[in-house]
Image (cartoon, rainbow, N blue to C red; front, side, top):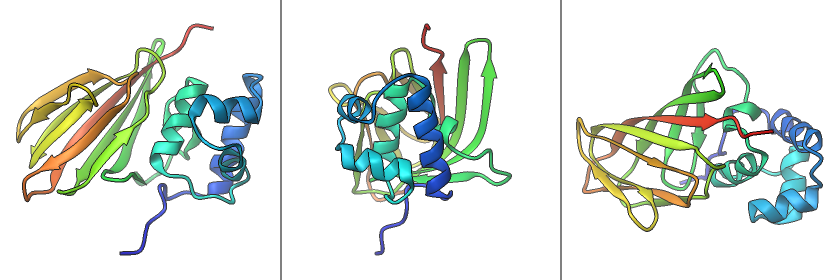
Length: 183
């Protein structure tokens, strides 16, 4: 199966937004790459739009900038699709309330694959409602399990993961809650 890009948007637009966010925070390319745990060449390629980053890489970068991933994406008229190692997520809506940004996703996790995501910035939480299949998700050292109709949530400012159990594809919603970091 041919690998698909992590996001369905122009990588130059994403790169430009990342660069502007990094520069607005006064962080060098080298420092951001170090904080995000990625290579400087990788970050440079993402910023110039010449490299197709993984979803995990984009989350690592945006976590270090203290912004939700939606900050680097277009506000699409259609759901924005993002792909990770084991998760496909459609960004359905981004909304803000006071000092919190929320992103609502429809997710699909095929059986047999595991995705480990880097920690988001402090205070970020994830809330999943499963519709089909059985999902293990949450902190890498203490995953939670949910089946159809179940809801799980955790603080995702630690490494966390997703894995479908059994033969069925997991279909669920994911609500990510990003508090605005103090200035």
